[in-house]
Image 1 (cartoon, one colour):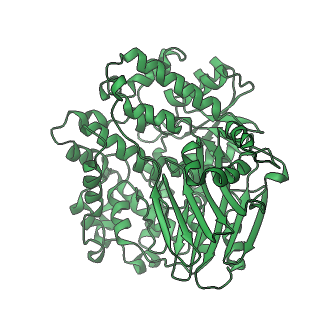
Image 2: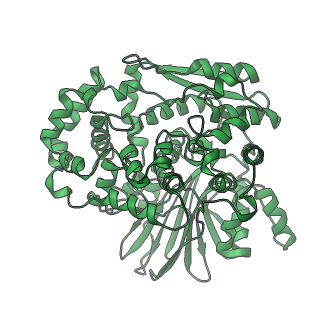
Image 3: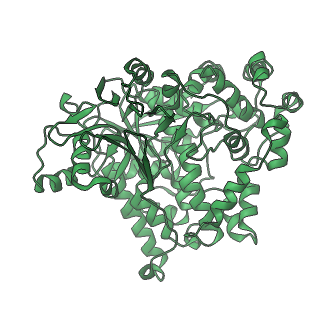
Length: 590
């Protein structure tokens, strides 16, 4: 896990190495172990390294292979790289290092963009072709690893984080009105290629981009998630799907235990993270470290789920770490957590992941996390409603979206409220071929868009802020593709994730499987009170917020009078949603 960056000039000028140094320097937390810069003609590549797979200097980046005429910067992990290396050696390729980076380089020479279909892992990468003078950029299927682009007629810059691109200068930092509508309407989800800034885009997940030195380009979607059982699976009984799920997850967890350093688990005590502990133990992991976090209770809502994580830690004899965070520590660390966000994220548990990652990084450099299970196995409360509704689209919008276009117009000043972009995006996504009925349409949207732009981004940003690599077995593409083929009737019962829960009964105690669904609760940010509320009030009514002219002052006043009266359908604070955007802009100096 690392931070990559680069610049390709289209105007016959040399890349600005001082700017690139500032960009890579901003990502030191993503890669605290080493740094490198390489330049040739119109291109320059930069890298910050976190040593995980191969600790030797031979795997340093940028990696240049003069014999093949290729140079690479790479962020991520290719879990099947040993098998790919063996295949490449059979084709006559010679290796000078032992990690996955060189496998990526030689795989591109052997198979071109088709190499992406062979990879099992998470990745963002950039490869410069010396002889053709072309740059190749690619991102993994589910966007686990980020890749931001700043494009002008003179040059293209790219980096693993949006704030890093800002450090290089020359970015149009004006607010994108389409993205603003998404952020405030679609639970802070701003789908690729958009970001909140007009001058920065994201390469969409499952896409590659090839650019010539004169600026000509070609972009292609190389992976699509299709729903519905294959012809030979349509009569499969429930028990067969159970076994396939468990076998696939077992393989995904084992693959992600590959590292030259210790691997831990973020253990919430829910089914998902508990399964990871169980399967790692089954795979032979010993002296396993697990980590849980809790917060003070507010308004009778529990701020921790230690009783469940304790149960799993005791059953498997893990070295368990519990971190209890008082409200004052949340407040004192919020500015740093906001700074760590590549884009503003409204979910309360961003601060939880930030503080948990701080603790985990003291003990290990790699951690497995249970993100993705709810999206691929239908674990959220809105899925049964969508499945049963005569109008699945309307049911989804009512359950998930923070407000309709009328509510959005109330929030912002008139210049920003021109069109219901978020509503149109959801309608268009539901209408795409490849997913029927309504449940599968909702699952596809959540898996390929919401998951990427909220939970996955949150985990990447907050773990990387502490030089910690997070691996997400539930987002193994083979498991995701399997889950997309499972009929909805096997996912929805038992408050969702039924097929996963029933498979888990072979391994986990009933107390964990049958517990009420939990979240990563941070009640102090849901029910804004005390010093946190004061901080939010000062920001939203201050001179910088007023100068931006985003929000309707009357609406802000209404929220501030009683924040607890204004909770979104997803049980979030409307006041916090506005505050995060304002505070993030402050943190980035915008």
